[in-house]
Image 1 (cartoon, rainbow, N blue to C red):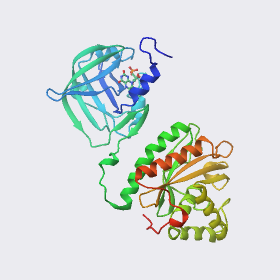
Image 2 (image 1 turned 30 degrees about the horizontal axis):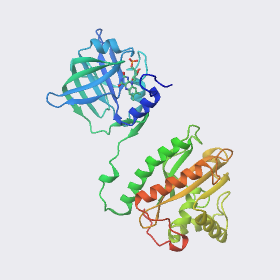
Image 3 (image 1 turned 180 degrees about the vertical axis):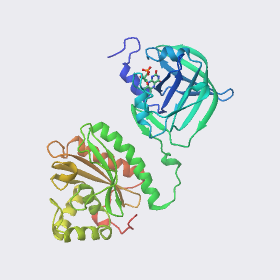
Image 4 (image 1 turned 180 degrees about the horizontal axis):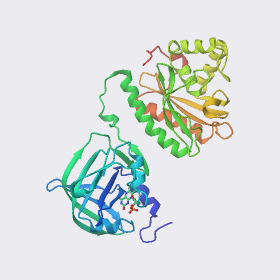
Length: 372
Ligand SMILES: Cc1cc2nc3c(=O)[nH]c(=O)nc-3n(C[C@H](O)[C@H](O)[C@H](O)COP(=O)(O)O)c2cc1C
């Protein structure tokens, strides 16, 4: 709903503020009876180094506000990236937030939550009105750092911190290039999955063949069994067929021969000539469409369809597969559909950002070492 005073609505403001990515803290304190209180807060910020001052702000309507307003001391527990559960626990109301949560007493007995990335033990210096919040200014008395990676919050979701691609060394071989590609593509995958509300996977060619290194799930999950590190067959999976179509034949041939010798999987092309024809078609269309395969009934429980598109590196080698997965009944595999368009555009953008000029055609495919 539009806010008549400001001309923008509260949701839009929240989204804009969410573009400023933060860490996540739990601020803890004790009440007059010595009972612990705590709330999740990402309004924490540094203020001054000398003297050491920090601030955070609390909603006037938070049930624990009277306690923080009266408290002399508080602790800023900076959460680690494996503490999403702690963040969620302290973002809920209720008196039992500390039950089952490992803590130890800090200055004045204020609890420090075990397993955090860092701690600032503070004395409340002042507080200031700030609209529907109160800003607390704290003087830092004691600090501690564990070396654990901090949890990150932005755009309304939990994130993990990774070094920026631009900061990484330029040289370093195929593995570093691929790592950078995975980082870049992971971010793109999150955005695309949010936009399309489809389950997407990121495949690399590992030492055991096509391997999914990231899943981004739609709001209606395809399966509970989407595992990172899942190794797929070459001929019966969209990801596998993408690698078979665009990696040098000598990389994929042993895998294809082994699968053909075993009679292949349900839904897979069973002859060498059939595979050649299928891969030619995939290269011509630039996309793998696998419709209604039952090959993964164990894994996904039902008949699924999948799409896969290639991402290329500067040498023209296929470095990643972007794959969409969904129940056969609802996955839109049509050329004009949002999904196919979104996947194609995403893969093309990623290839460009990785430095690839144009996708190679079948005749320009060159030999390249298996990167694993
Ligand atoms: C990531 C995240 C950040 C939050 N940041 C703040 C904040 O800075 N200030 C605030 O008052 N509430 C914040 N909240 C909401 C409180 O954690 C939530 O209202 C909590 O229930 C308040 O605790 P209480 O009910 O014990 O008072 C945040 C919640 C989340 C999930």
